[in-house]
Length: 475
Ligand code: SF4
Image 1 (cartoon, helix red, strand yellow):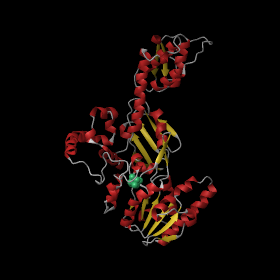
Image 2: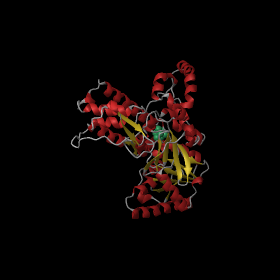
Image 3: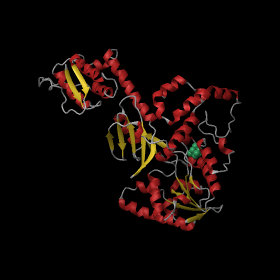
Image 4: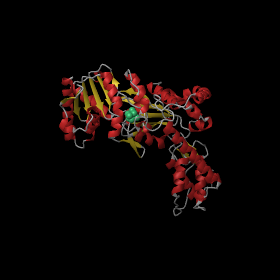
């Protein structure tokens, strides 16, 4: 028996070096053993096997790709299966294409399980907000079915590229600082932060999308396997919602068919339904926020996580209107918390504007984006979407009654003034509308972020701060 000692359960390079040496030395699969050591420096127990120098070989790409997935499987004998396949490829170069072969079929099953575990990790990681010396830090605890942390972490880096986050798992940790990924040792659940308000969001979101009439327990357990429930905030609702499903379904069946203008109707809603909100007159900002979550006035609700309403007091004298929530706002449910929001915060401090004294909102309440690979890229809302969402902005204006509205960028200008604006020529001056509302236009902070050279950024930032100061004086 020949034994190779690997440094960790995912030591693919160690396995490949050892397997190559074994195969060249003619060590049969029954005589080859791969174990995970605990810090030993040597790859081979009792020295490496000797082999002929000219006995080089190349493993087919299909095998290497399979092996890279297989090594993430939790089964103890995965290294043996990998070596058996490698050994057999010597006499059967097309072995990987023989799907009826028991070893190939077994490898395919395990590969499928690994890929499924990666998919579940992408779907079920739930970050909690924490603070450290560098500011906001999002932390998640997750127990993957297989060792997929390293291969799945890049997905989260692309998805949450501007956030600082850490995923803790029993296999190791992945930390992203906004530019660099680091992997660390195994963690345990006690290192995960306690419940935060995001938990409440997930529960509300899950409850609002749960349709008792469409409940299929078997399919649900397959899609959301029970092993993940303990770390999913929304899973706490499953027993209650499924227990009540029969009663709720009976109630739904016995109800008359929903009328097209039923308020806030979510289930089976058409893509666009303006009538559903036409007769709604929110009396408070909280009413308005609830209405936005059920809004179907334009199709943007469909691909967003949630509607993002304004933040700030109903008595604010200055209302700041941006364009739409970005990727980060869409997840957090708060306006101006992404990079443009941070720049706005800094500029407001410089201008002497107190964020707590403002009402901050957007012209469009749902995040419009297009997928690019695994990222969601911002897409500017069109005039029809701005017009549809103006219905909510007008209610915000009615409720807040600001003395001045600061419109950030062309989309906000269109929503607030009801016409196309030329931001650079109209900026900085107070315009009074027919209803007496005064509006001041300036650029959106994301414009500053997009400027390619530092000199232009400094110049434009100074002009932006100047416009913010003009807004303070005009209130
Ligand atoms: Fe409604 Fe505005 Fe969302 Fe469109 S973007 S669905 S109008 S809240």
